[in-house]
Amino acid sequence: MRVLARADLERLLRPLDVVEALADAFREYAAGAVTVPDRTLLPVGDLGMLFVMPAAIAPRAGEAAAGALGTKLVTFYGGNRERGHPTHQATYVLMDAATGRPLALLEGTFLTGMRTGATSALAARHLARPDSRRLVCFGTSVQAEHQLHCLAAVLHPRHVTVLGRDADRARRFAARMTAALGVAVEVGRDAAEAVRAADVVTCATTSTTPLFPADAVRPGTHLDAVGTFQPQHRELDSATVRRAYVVVEAYASVPAAAGELVIAMREGAIGRDHVAAELAEVVTGRRPGRTTADQVTLFKSVGFALEDLAAARLAYNRAMADDAGTEIALW
Image 1: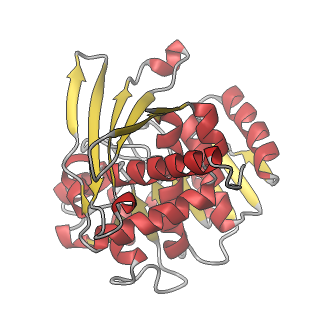
Image 2: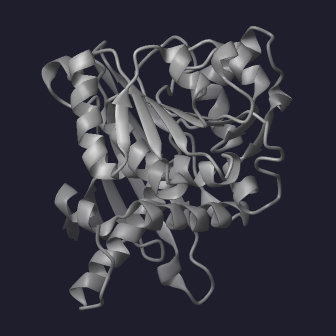
Image 3: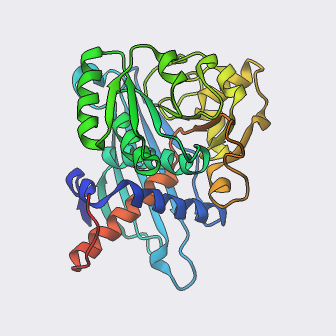
């Protein structure tokens, strides 16, 4: 059984390659080859929670190696920021879909961050305006870093603004991301002002209440909400959701986790039919992405087990190719 540590994954997984692997996986999902049951949630007292997230891609006839099977074990402990630990920590077990044989144990925290950012980038490819160059990021966490890496790989922004609750942390984050992205990353002081100037806004926070007012969102903006994953929490208000053309990872994930949508429905701001598409439909062209330049678009992400499986499969295949002496692209 192969063990792929964080350092291995940092070497093997490049943002654009993960975006393409996810696009392939969502096409398989659209074709009916994927099984993703509801995630299992185990509360750990009032300290945190454990999620179990399995997924399977059925092997194609005569191509057993093309399938995949795996599960992620991920914990969320909201108090970990104060303890100096990530709020999300995870491990992934990858298996052979044809035999059930364990193939690899992967460090899942980096895997989760990368696949979340890459999923947002895949959605932005279809939902953001092609000329989007000003990117605003709410949050200064590890996940916010992945969001910027992956969105920048697709959008090529010329200017980035970050907003965080801790000014010193935000300044350090901005300096680090300036060096990593090769573009100016500044710290914003006013949320509404930053959003008014944005082409794309990504939200990767632990906030349970809206981060900015709806009237700050100008026509043509793409919104990316990945921070909340519980039905009672939201980063965007109902008026913002009502304005937007909404795409989700999967329809089935909305009731249990997409707080922005659940709350907006409960408040009567939208109906269930306000969700225009799931990502697989947009990727395959069954439903449209952005249709006009002034359309406000929203991608709501809560974490979908297929994404973990696709990223794990890519990392494992690249590791095996590396062992065999096949040249692979690195960071």
